[in-house]
Amino acid sequence: MSGHRPPTDDSATDVVRWAAFSCVLVPVVLLWYGGSLAGAAGTALGLAAVTAVCRVLLRQSERGAARLLAEEHAPHRGRRHRGMNGARRGSRHPGGNSPVA
Image (cartoon, rainbow, N blue to C red; front, side, top):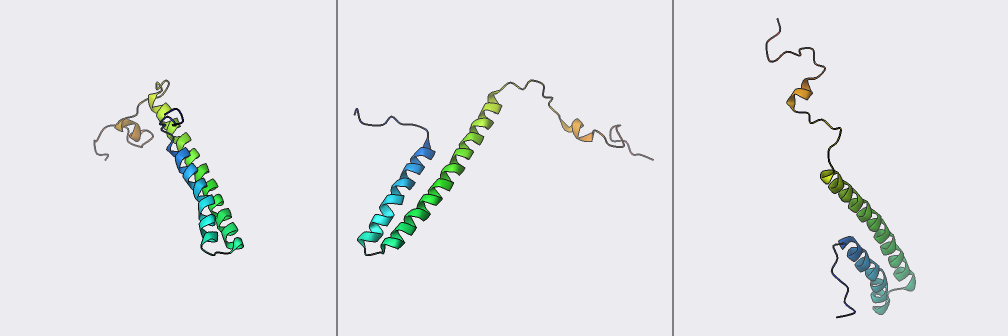
């Protein structure tokens, strides 16, 4: 199995590869079944545009997920954990739950 590609977790690359394959296959099938050359070319351009936009969105999503994962594993230096008490800061009545007369 020397020609076999090792398994990867990059599913976005696989999706883009299949989309690029469809950008070629669909116009060929349209021409095979009697579609016009202009229609097949327009379909190819449309599919290529959709593929490009999806690729950009997938990459942005991957970067965002990687950033969240990095923040999750990074030490929280300089950050203070705010509990429920932090929600009352700046209020007019800083003292407990006593009624104000």
